[in-house]
Image (cartoon, rainbow, N blue to C red; front, side, top):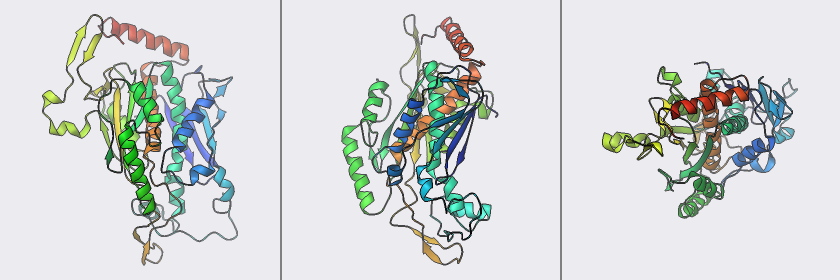
Length: 393
């Protein structure tokens, strides 16, 4: 389904830079460059990251669509340079070179290498790894940071925290104070709000790093302040849960997505799954729980939107797995360049960006306006309309 708001990214891991084009934001949206850079720094953080984060200092340049600190309504082009490109000019040259570097042919199990080399007919897995690398999520985080600024104008806040890392389980489930949760997560080197679990997670990362292994985990993203009615039940691809699941699964290394109670709904009776509905004059509509994760019938219901993603361990390992040389077809070990031991904390930040993009798409569609004044007027009018029907935000 074509969206009123569209995000397109380009770039390679060791190329000149990463680019995102965001089309469809209303004119007049205030743009804070420092806030975008802050999100890029959050993506680079987290215990267990590799040497690449010591090279890069990600900062965004805006090449189009913004004037005097406000969007123009035209496409916004965001670009983040790769500092490491200075060390890769010969291997990532756009033009022909006299002597090409030797191809890399030892596919990594779990990576895009094997299928990509067969699909695109290349004899060098660098042609695949450069675009499939999670370094390319820089562009998504930049785009998501811009969308986050649009959502803030509508009273929507997006946060995340790590709930599982390397088999260690932290705090999860329904929360009374999400601002407190976000503060605790940001203070943690693994972005876990549970101090006891944090210590065990740090130890697990150290142990995995010592043996040349990698770790995965689960992050939870929460969007607070969404009014009811974002998304639609009309078509499968307009259901907001469908779009959120696709966006989270679009992040490298994500193998599973849950919304609200998630797979737990398969193990409980309906009386312990569905969120009972109440109403009083002061509070309006309320729920006794949020097991649906803020989504019913493909639409937001006014409760916090709760999405979790399961990240597999990174497939590039210092102690490489067995593989095959795809040129000679002889046994080999997988290619190793450099890698993180664990990137689950960073994946949560990337997932915040993806959720922000999807929610911004839904808000642009719902509160359509060429300029922010029109959009905010439509938003206020909708809130007033549902208030007449008993909804108190």
